Image (cartoon, rainbow, N blue to C red):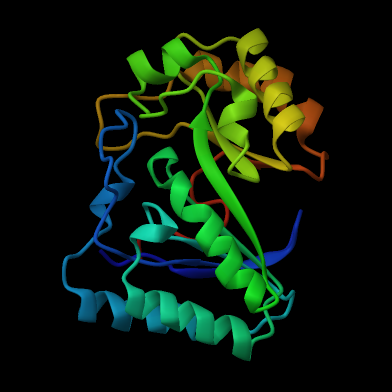
Length: 237
């Protein structure tokens, strides 16, 4: 799949970002997500693709975000070594990665690894919503915990997903405020059409843009992606 895999985020929390490829997401059951299609079992091909994406990193902000349509822990050791090398050569001081709840027990070891390199690790989890019933019965997210504080404990940042049927202005605002209360940063994604059976609810999207977006658009702790390619990666080439 030919996708843009390197970009620079100039707005809030300036950083470089790369979209790498691994063997795919272990969970693969989120009903709204088809990102796991960006995957390959050919580790040598993945390594070549990931090296090319990482070759663009300059270290201009000393901050790098690595995403991979799955969890950071699912990347092959050869790619992880390449990330280590680039971080050292480009003087990366903060590394942002993503992880599913399933891999939370890998995070202390990852933090120790990067701390020994003088790099602060920031781990983001896709919570999507703190309404546990909606999250598991509708979205099938795979988080077997309902307490936001317990979910947040192993992580630093969270993703929320809005623009879905059944959401309201009140529920979206409650999710954002809960996220800000328990996480350092919140990334809001707005549902866009994809290959899954879950499709955007345009009325909910419009309500978000009208009522929620103005409240948080200037908040330095909140990223808002009205399109899933707003960070500059993931666009089809």
